[in-house]
Image 1: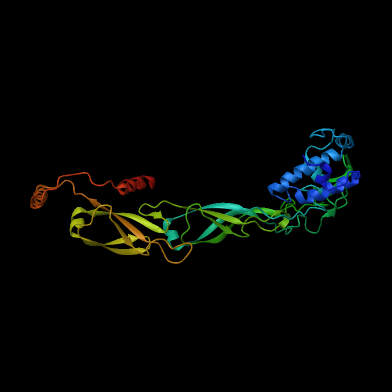
Image 2: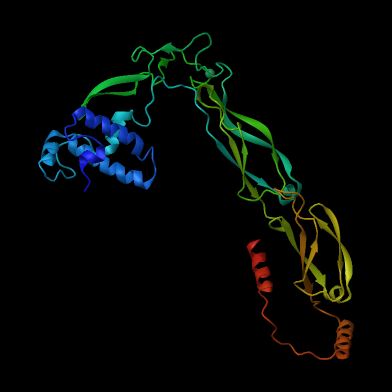
Length: 368
Ligand code: ZN
């Protein structure tokens, strides 16, 4: 094990003050809050252990005589180095001087349901938001009109109460927030009646919001400064809109593409036809070639969703489902039999497995 004096970089006859100074200097360099590296953490452990031993006169004497000087020996008042660090550096949370009443307001989250139609090109919504707004009576001062905050008598405006605590390192000054003014340094003798001294009130307001084209479920839109106003008129937080795109009866979404299923009569599939279909943005004309099969996909370019990032639009993809006629009358049955008789017979047979047919079926159930 490394020599404790070497670890701290001090002479064997170093005074208690030298030991403290050396530890302090190394802690500033190696404490995990300052230096996150693993190597620093290891060195900090050694340094802290060396300090624990050498700062306790009994343990130091034992160490100097070649004793163990092990961990946990002696009766130090500290539990671990966290306490020592806080004593040296004043702790993490505590700050000097009074705390401001003004604080940033909280962020707010609002869930917004939009129709698939609305995200093809984007939309504007009037959203009602229940939020904290600045109190108009006191304009955030928290005081009754004509009055003002007064210096706290207990802490004399510092917001802190100082105490002297005896510790291993001698007497240490610690401070804690003043209980009388809750650390503000001032008290409000006559709180604003409108907001009960909060500087803000709850209100419902309506804000217009642009929902861009191409947004998808789960996406969050940040509206800076549209969250609630902070205590005592502090700056606004942000408002986040979480998008949920509603399920559409006809169209499904795959990235920026729109998917739809087209039912096609067997005769149209055989002979070919043209059709005008209503898409989410007006009519599209599709041409069905003679001999079209079930599960074929027609792609209509640039009739999908406008892309959220980048230019252009996705495509409209139309999956064909050929419909077999049922309940034929005797004349129709005869015509089909004649047609069948004119063809070379092909017995039903397994073909190559096609996953696509089954995944389409599954998708249909998922979209219900
Ligand atoms: Zn007020």
